[in-house]
Image (cartoon, rainbow, N blue to C red):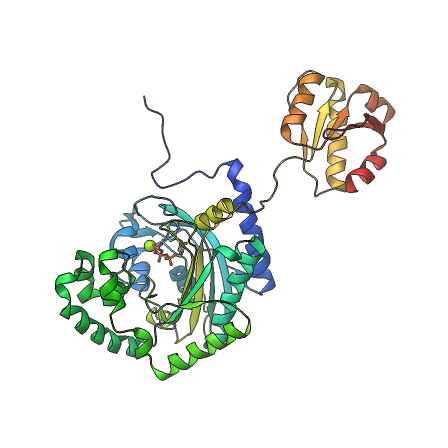
Length: 420
Ligand code: ATP
Ligand code: MG
């Protein structure tokens, strides 16, 4: 019988890798706190209609990537492919979006039925931020600064480039679409199959094509930036001015259109050339029309999402620091009769020195084999607790990485040493 394997494209994150994951989770949490964003936790599944409506029927996600099934009540259910739609749903459902500002963040798994490859999986994780009730470029700038600070804290600023664009208002975009379609129709014979399909349904997406054969046509196409409405152009100029003032480097990429239908005005991506084909680590933008489209009041909104797998890959490839999960202190129980005393002392140490990782040898073994385990564990210090220690109310301490004689000390002296 063949052994059971995980589902294709769904990864185990093993203990040896988890410290990278924890590193970005910890830093992201701290930053969300320092920018005054509140966490929201959302279900992993929603009614399919939410995503059809929110993401748009002519998008990669809805056309081919959704994990959709019927539940026992014959309802169509979908595993969430992203977090924005659920935030909007929750905001409207609980009456949190009307006449107030919400600054939310979330973190968790997302599901898309894609062809698994490096940086692209069927279960993956996103950090996301969504702000409701704030129009204008200042909040757009804040989100960019938030993400930039995240890269700084993680040590990966040199490996990420910011690209920005403005998609204009819906009306301006619709006008531009006509100009674009006219141009593309003149070059119909040179379009690839994908682009021919998109021409009628979602022509803007053609600009997003990665096909080398399409690049000349795309580069010669009329540019959205040259067809912006006055308001969007003004806000985009303000955003650029803020970024200049704060010395955030960026490139204006007129081909940046983003995959989802709901974006308008500012869009941005942080892209790395250290990740191969899947270079976008963070993507975001404004979606001022989405809340109203879901039955809410007219509410400006903006957000971004970071792919954690790609972030971790970048941390690993550029050899950044990670959280250490090795024990710092290894406790050797030198005699079975001293077991309870050893556990009691270790508990007291955990109370006194809560930030120190203490590993107790919980399965028997000779003193020699326990010292071997202590050495292998990576710990700096071994504590040896046997009958003699128990009777004298002491603990023996041995530095594993330095030449120093073993010492027997009181609990208080040990605490002082560990704290030092
Ligand atoms: P792509 O062009 O790479 O397919 P997308 O436009 O579909 O990206 P978004 O929906 O904007 O991506 O998601 C935001 C981020 O989430 C992406 O920039 C990426 O870092 C990450 N991401 C998206 N899909 C996947 C996936 N299948 N596996 C891993 N990470 C992903
Ligand atoms: Mg995609």
